[in-house]
Amino acid sequence: MKRFQFLGTLTRPAPAAAPIAPFPINAVSRALMVGAFVVYAGTGHLESGLGHWPWIALAVLAAVQAGIQVAFLMTHRDPARLMRTWSVVLPIDIAVLNLGAAADGASLSVLSIVAIATLYTSSAMFRPPYVIALGALSAVLLFAAHGLTDVPHGTVSVWTLGLTAAVMLGVGFFSANRGVAEQALRERLIQAQAREHRHAEELGEALDAARANEARFEAFAANAPALLLLFDPEGVPIYANQAAGRLGSLGRDAVLETLTSGLAPTDGDATRDAIRHAIGGEVVELEFRAPLGGVPRDVSTIFFPVGSGAGAIMTDVTGQRELAARLERAREMERLGTLAGGVAHDFNNLLTAVLGNIYLAGGEIPAESPARELLAEARRAAERGAGLVRQLLAYSHFEFDRVEPVEISRLIAQTLDVARPGLDAAIEVRADAPVAAGCVTGNFGALQQVLLNLVLNARDAMPAGGCLTIRYGRVHIDGTYAAAGIDVRPGTFHAISVSDTGTGIATDALAHIFEPFYTTKPVGKGTGLGLPTALGILRAHGGWIDVETQEGAGSTFRVLLPVAHPGEERAAA
Image (cartoon, rainbow, N blue to C red):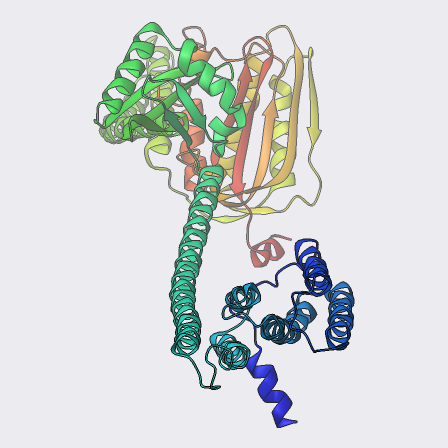
């Protein structure tokens, strides 16, 4: 068994070697070799005195070559089996060729040269040990074929020894050199494969990193609350994300179209200049007004260089600008309220003295005196002035005389009872307020003053009659909505709305309706303190007023008050 293992090790194929195809050239050459032997023997070139042995040898040769062809035919489709077949056929070829050379009797037969060629051919398929073994076999047979024929006394000729040595050295050198070349080639191939593998890994890592960066950019762009733009070196937009927020809801195509052709001439020139400066390497901040979605919007944009082009980050700051404007108006009203409060305190002191002296003077004047009616008129005017002072004080800083749980349903019902006598018969009153509407902590009289003021304003907005509606509901204000107003706070609130179908409020007047002494009513019909006073009272209760109006189609004032805690509601019940 070990002997066969040794043979298997000896006949291992050379690295990356493939067996020589046995068909058709090899098969033809073997047939020609048998034919050549037949012709050679038939023409009498063999030594005489051999009898029938040459023909027997030819028969054996033909049988061997036929067997080899059958073996090749059975294994030529399986490279591994074909290599094993070649490992057996090659020694047979060496033996047959050298025996033929011995039968030829020449010092250097053509068959010997063919045997040497076969030997070198074997080195293309097998490792050096096997090739050297074949060389040794060829040398032994070469020596046997020619060594005894070169001299009469049966000694080995110098020519035979030299030829044998040359064959052995040639085969050994060829096999060793081939092995070294194969080893070097194999090492270079391994190094190339390693480099290729390393480059493939680096390329894969680079592609993964690029995909990760692209995914991060796409996620950032898709969720960014701004419009991201890229411009080529000519200033033409080549990329726009589907931004979140208001700009994204309008659609990037609409935004891009507005930027390229929908801006006012001044804003369009400024935008093009900003893009050009950004392409040149500068960072430019620009704010302009753009008609996006049919509504003018304030847009803030930062232009910056990106490679040979430019990029831009565009955000809708309309809400921020409106909030800033409301904040400024609130500060102005606060300053005005502080001034009005100071004036009201001083004026209240003066009115106190005036009313006191009027009452004292009235006691000194006889009842039938004409001056008594003049004093009464002066007293009424002073009292109206005192009422205005109280309204100014309520606007600047409302203070509760007492705090109590106020039932919303009772507040609405009693306010309508007070207001109905002053309403025209052409005005239809509708009330939608549940009985168990809940409570708010505050002052009943002050809150009734707020609702009564809104009802009377609704009446005045419908001089020809109409419909006045009071509705109740609860609303939840989240942080997003709360950020839209100065007085707005998150939480759950009572919402009492007073709606009319009257004239509505003009757009230019809407921003001023809560300013003290501003009124749209004719002279003598209003003081301009009703809504400011109502707002001051509601602020003291932790609430505010929302307004929705359309000129010519009526208005809705919505009072929002914080819902009382459950304990306070039980106390009110």
